[in-house]
Image (cartoon, rainbow, N blue to C red; front, side, top):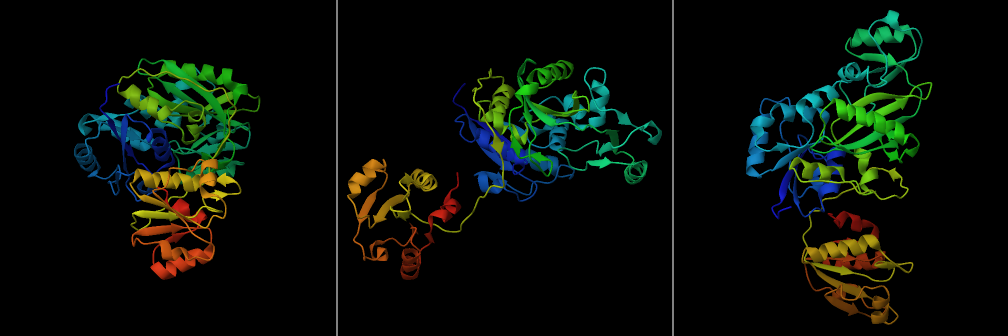
Length: 428
């Protein structure tokens, strides 16, 4: 590859998919990331280049606003993160002025509709039986879902004719299909620009929250089955980059296709941790660079929870930090705090170790491999006030001792932090 960076706009950037793309691309030396969203979301906490309040995709001003952003920010490619956004961007792609990362428009339109997907593949892959009238339903329960949607949003098990009648009376376009009682799986895939299926692997959908799998592990027991399904899908429609499909077992244990999505899955990070960076491969492939797969052969489990990011309205040039029970706790270096210190070094902050350490300080620093990190070492005696040794006004103080923090805060009026609050200072 040449040294020119690919400037990628992630939109909307604060969605679960957008955040996974950020995590996948942020350390690549080949890529500059820009984030944009239509609402203020978590993206503004993680993207250094962030643009909020882009009009929604159904707004008449959406296209002109997006084109202006692409031009002003010199965007090379847009990485869309939601199914409806993918479809919209494909419709206007010729007027945007940059690449759209993903599959062709015809495939996106097919994947957007579950009904069209089932009708297209019904003679090629096991798909759920669709019911169009009440008379077709012989046994209950059945399952209802919207034609366009993702995850488990809007789905419901219907256990009687009355429930089906009520659902259809409220929404005649609602899909009613056979109920599949077995386990559900997601299959993460990658197809290159030549149409070669380079990767497909299933994972179990463990704990589900708001339709999203937040706990997942590889499902190697069905690997051969899903590879056949993946090959059929890949042969029948044109796909490019990361995509996935979901399957569920029927009462006989046979896998049935639930949906196809022409984007990466939020929990595909499971395979990223094994070496398959779907987002990075998709960007490279979009620019016609050759890609290949290298997967580590270790066992793995992914569990997701709400993350935390903070924005503080403070400015500082110097970081004062304590050693005992703070930077070193229970004979271990505090990994979060040491990470923050290196972040501070990257930002040209001055680092000062301010400690009452009772042993040989040089030996202790060497033992924990902490020598050379600090610009200044202030070794004071027990009973001394740390506030007396802090000279700069634009400084922060990190110490496990409440008494020390209280004294510094009251004496100097600078921000003080306990080790557990250092997370609020970390921006990476």
